[in-house]
Length: 240
Image: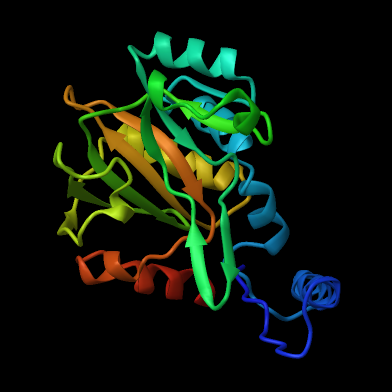
């Protein structure tokens, strides 16, 4: 479930947050009355947004998971980067999105060297996810809808940013996942109590597939345009 806080131009600060809390409670309550059909129950979506839970469940489902730590300790962070041959991926612990002055901002994954780490004081303010880089890679987006598994692939060049969302629009094409990987993706989504999930995988140079993260309510319009029948699969789930 996704929602946008309504614009209330005459309120700000604590008053605006109080209104936002009421909307959160209202939308959460919609899961309980008899009648509405949800692709995935809102409470299951919220649980599945836990990135640590995703990593544990992905490994349990049989997917490869990069070595990962969450820390706000600069010594631990530097040691981890060194173990990753001097470069590691830095990501937010949770999806970081906020709006200010009418503009949206998002924290993307980036590749850092030891000399690019923040100061001990700055890192100490909040934990950061550091992960073994899968690079060079091909980006793969897997969409699981009910028992249907659909996937698409995008080429990533060495000149592009690590996070494909920061790159120029590139072509996506339908991709045939190995059967064991497809089954593991379906098991991961179903095991989290979801009937929909967008999974980001990275395929390394040797052809191995690595789990990066799962979005339990991810966008998919660009994949439909690339030839994946996601809308049809969602309609089947709702009608069933």
